[in-house]
Image (cartoon, rainbow, N blue to C red; front, side):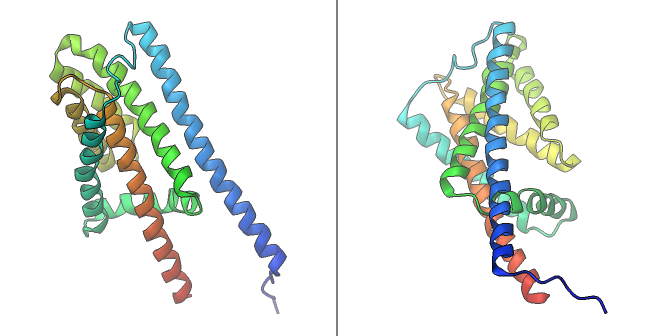
Length: 216
Protein backbone atom coordinates (compact mmCIF):
# COMPACT_ATOMS: atom_id res chain seq x y z
CA UNK A 1 0.00 0.00 0.00
CA UNK A 2 1.45 3.36 -1.07
CA UNK A 3 1.91 5.93 1.63
CA UNK A 4 1.41 9.60 1.08
CA UNK A 5 4.58 11.67 1.61
CA UNK A 6 4.67 13.30 5.01
CA UNK A 7 6.04 16.81 5.51
CA UNK A 8 7.27 18.03 8.85
CA UNK A 9 7.38 21.67 9.90
CA UNK A 10 10.98 22.06 8.71
CA UNK A 11 10.04 20.82 5.22
CA UNK A 12 7.11 23.22 5.08
CA UNK A 13 9.28 26.14 6.17
CA UNK A 14 11.89 25.22 3.55
CA UNK A 15 9.23 25.04 0.81
CA UNK A 16 7.79 28.37 1.93
CA UNK A 17 11.23 29.98 1.91
CA UNK A 18 11.96 28.60 -1.57
CA UNK A 19 8.60 29.87 -2.82
CA UNK A 20 9.24 33.35 -1.44
CA UNK A 21 12.71 33.40 -3.01
CA UNK A 22 11.23 32.45 -6.39
CA UNK A 23 8.73 35.29 -6.09
CA UNK A 24 11.44 37.77 -5.19
CA UNK A 25 13.47 36.55 -8.15
CA UNK A 26 10.46 37.11 -10.43
CA UNK A 27 9.93 40.66 -9.13
CA UNK A 28 13.64 41.42 -9.43
CA UNK A 29 13.75 39.87 -12.90
CA UNK A 30 10.72 41.88 -13.98
CA UNK A 31 12.32 45.07 -12.73
CA UNK A 32 15.60 44.32 -14.54
CA UNK A 33 13.68 43.44 -17.71
CA UNK A 34 11.90 46.80 -17.54
CA UNK A 35 15.21 48.58 -16.95
CA UNK A 36 16.28 46.86 -20.15
CA UNK A 37 13.40 48.64 -21.90
CA UNK A 38 14.75 51.94 -20.57
CA UNK A 39 18.21 51.17 -21.96
CA UNK A 40 16.68 50.16 -25.30
CA UNK A 41 14.73 53.42 -25.32
CA UNK A 42 17.93 55.45 -24.94
CA UNK A 43 19.80 53.35 -27.52
CA UNK A 44 16.97 53.48 -30.08
CA UNK A 45 16.43 57.14 -29.33
CA UNK A 46 20.10 57.80 -30.05
CA UNK A 47 19.81 56.00 -33.40
CA UNK A 48 16.62 57.86 -34.35
CA UNK A 49 17.75 61.20 -32.99
CA UNK A 50 14.96 61.28 -30.39
CA UNK A 51 15.49 61.69 -26.66
CA UNK A 52 13.15 59.41 -24.66
CA UNK A 53 12.90 62.07 -21.96
CA UNK A 54 12.40 65.14 -24.13
CA UNK A 55 8.75 65.37 -23.05
CA UNK A 56 9.33 64.25 -19.46
CA UNK A 57 8.88 67.04 -16.92
CA UNK A 58 7.87 67.14 -13.29
CA UNK A 59 4.46 68.65 -12.60
CA UNK A 60 2.12 68.05 -9.67
CA UNK A 61 -0.93 68.73 -11.84
CA UNK A 62 0.23 66.23 -14.46
CA UNK A 63 0.97 63.72 -11.72
CA UNK A 64 -2.65 64.01 -10.56
CA UNK A 65 -3.89 63.70 -14.15
CA UNK A 66 -1.83 60.55 -14.51
CA UNK A 67 -3.28 59.03 -11.34
CA UNK A 68 -6.84 59.85 -12.39
CA UNK A 69 -6.12 58.55 -15.88
CA UNK A 70 -5.48 55.08 -14.46
CA UNK A 71 -9.01 54.78 -13.06
CA UNK A 72 -10.86 54.15 -16.38
CA UNK A 73 -8.29 51.51 -17.33
CA UNK A 74 -8.61 49.75 -13.97
CA UNK A 75 -12.42 49.87 -14.08
CA UNK A 76 -12.27 48.18 -17.47
CA UNK A 77 -9.89 45.58 -16.02
CA UNK A 78 -12.38 44.85 -13.23
CA UNK A 79 -15.18 44.55 -15.77
CA UNK A 80 -13.12 42.18 -17.93
CA UNK A 81 -12.33 39.99 -14.93
CA UNK A 82 -15.93 39.73 -13.80
CA UNK A 83 -17.88 39.51 -17.04
CA UNK A 84 -18.72 35.94 -18.02
CA UNK A 85 -17.31 36.03 -21.54
CA UNK A 86 -15.02 33.13 -22.47
CA UNK A 87 -12.29 35.25 -24.08
CA UNK A 88 -12.09 37.56 -21.05
CA UNK A 89 -12.11 34.61 -18.64
CA UNK A 90 -9.21 33.02 -20.55
CA UNK A 91 -7.16 36.17 -20.00
CA UNK A 92 -8.13 36.23 -16.33
CA UNK A 93 -7.12 32.60 -15.82
CA UNK A 94 -3.84 33.22 -17.64
CA UNK A 95 -3.02 36.15 -15.33
CA UNK A 96 -3.97 34.13 -12.25
CA UNK A 97 -1.88 31.15 -13.34
CA UNK A 98 1.17 33.09 -14.49
CA UNK A 99 1.21 36.10 -12.16
CA UNK A 100 -0.72 34.97 -9.10
CA UNK A 101 1.81 32.52 -7.60
CA UNK A 102 4.72 34.78 -8.60
CA UNK A 103 3.56 37.97 -6.90
CA UNK A 104 1.33 36.68 -4.09
CA UNK A 105 4.04 37.05 -1.42
CA UNK A 106 5.46 40.26 -2.82
CA UNK A 107 5.37 43.29 -0.56
CA UNK A 108 3.43 46.42 -1.49
CA UNK A 109 6.70 48.29 -1.92
CA UNK A 110 8.20 45.60 -4.19
CA UNK A 111 5.12 45.55 -6.40
CA UNK A 112 5.01 49.34 -6.58
CA UNK A 113 8.69 49.53 -7.55
CA UNK A 114 8.11 46.87 -10.22
CA UNK A 115 5.15 48.88 -11.52
CA UNK A 116 7.28 52.04 -11.67
CA UNK A 117 9.96 50.30 -13.73
CA UNK A 118 7.34 48.83 -16.08
CA UNK A 119 5.68 52.22 -16.51
CA UNK A 120 8.99 53.97 -17.09
CA UNK A 121 10.43 51.38 -19.46
CA UNK A 122 7.41 50.88 -21.69
CA UNK A 123 6.37 54.53 -21.86
CA UNK A 124 9.88 55.81 -22.55
CA UNK A 125 10.26 53.31 -25.38
CA UNK A 126 6.82 53.44 -26.99
CA UNK A 127 5.54 56.93 -26.26
CA UNK A 128 8.86 58.67 -25.58
CA UNK A 129 10.78 57.35 -28.60
CA UNK A 130 8.63 55.51 -31.15
CA UNK A 131 5.61 57.81 -31.04
CA UNK A 132 7.78 60.93 -30.92
CA UNK A 133 9.80 59.72 -33.91
CA UNK A 134 6.75 58.63 -35.94
CA UNK A 135 5.01 61.98 -35.36
CA UNK A 136 6.88 63.30 -38.41
CA UNK A 137 4.40 61.25 -40.46
CA UNK A 138 1.40 62.66 -38.59
CA UNK A 139 0.00 62.23 -35.10
CA UNK A 140 -2.61 59.66 -36.13
CA UNK A 141 -0.05 57.55 -37.98
CA UNK A 142 2.31 57.80 -35.00
CA UNK A 143 -0.36 56.64 -32.56
CA UNK A 144 -1.44 53.73 -34.76
CA UNK A 145 2.14 52.66 -35.50
CA UNK A 146 3.24 52.87 -31.88
CA UNK A 147 0.34 50.98 -30.43
CA UNK A 148 0.20 48.20 -32.98
CA UNK A 149 3.74 47.44 -31.82
CA UNK A 150 2.66 47.92 -28.20
CA UNK A 151 -0.13 45.37 -28.67
CA UNK A 152 2.18 42.85 -30.35
CA UNK A 153 4.65 43.07 -27.45
CA UNK A 154 1.77 42.20 -25.11
CA UNK A 155 0.76 39.17 -27.17
CA UNK A 156 -0.99 36.73 -24.84
CA UNK A 157 -4.20 36.02 -26.73
CA UNK A 158 -5.69 37.70 -29.78
CA UNK A 159 -8.14 39.60 -27.60
CA UNK A 160 -5.35 40.66 -25.26
CA UNK A 161 -3.40 42.09 -28.21
CA UNK A 162 -6.47 44.15 -29.18
CA UNK A 163 -7.02 45.32 -25.59
CA UNK A 164 -3.33 46.21 -25.15
CA UNK A 165 -3.40 48.12 -28.45
CA UNK A 166 -6.45 50.13 -27.38
CA UNK A 167 -4.96 50.80 -23.96
CA UNK A 168 -1.82 52.00 -25.71
CA UNK A 169 -3.92 54.37 -27.82
CA UNK A 170 -5.44 55.68 -24.59
CA UNK A 171 -1.97 56.28 -23.13
CA UNK A 172 -0.88 58.00 -26.34
CA UNK A 173 -3.90 60.28 -26.19
CA UNK A 174 -3.03 61.18 -22.61
CA UNK A 175 0.33 62.35 -23.91
CA UNK A 176 -0.90 64.44 -26.84
CA UNK A 177 -4.13 65.79 -25.38
CA UNK A 178 -2.60 67.98 -22.70
CA UNK A 179 -0.38 70.94 -23.52
CA UNK A 180 2.52 71.04 -23.10
CA UNK A 181 2.99 67.31 -23.66
CA UNK A 182 4.34 65.55 -20.62
CA UNK A 183 5.43 61.91 -20.68
CA UNK A 184 4.92 61.91 -16.91
CA UNK A 185 1.16 61.52 -17.46
CA UNK A 186 1.19 58.16 -19.29
CA UNK A 187 4.05 56.93 -17.09
CA UNK A 188 2.03 57.58 -13.93
CA UNK A 189 -1.15 56.17 -15.49
CA UNK A 190 0.67 53.02 -16.59
CA UNK A 191 2.36 52.63 -13.21
CA UNK A 192 -0.80 53.06 -11.12
CA UNK A 193 -2.81 50.81 -13.44
CA UNK A 194 -0.28 47.97 -13.23
CA UNK A 195 0.01 48.38 -9.46
CA UNK A 196 -3.76 48.18 -8.95
CA UNK A 197 -3.96 45.17 -11.25
CA UNK A 198 -1.23 43.41 -9.28
CA UNK A 199 -3.13 43.98 -6.03
CA UNK A 200 -6.40 42.73 -7.52
CA UNK A 201 -4.75 39.63 -9.02
CA UNK A 202 -3.26 38.80 -5.61
CA UNK A 203 -6.69 39.19 -4.01
CA UNK A 204 -8.55 36.88 -6.38
CA UNK A 205 -5.63 34.43 -6.50
CA UNK A 206 -5.75 34.06 -2.72
CA UNK A 207 -9.51 33.60 -2.89
CA UNK A 208 -9.06 30.90 -5.52
CA UNK A 209 -6.42 29.10 -3.44
CA UNK A 210 -8.65 29.22 -0.35
CA UNK A 211 -11.60 27.85 -2.34
CA UNK A 212 -9.49 25.04 -3.81
CA UNK A 213 -8.14 24.09 -0.38
CA UNK A 214 -11.57 24.08 1.25
CA UNK A 215 -12.95 21.95 -1.57
CA UNK A 216 -10.12 19.45 -1.41
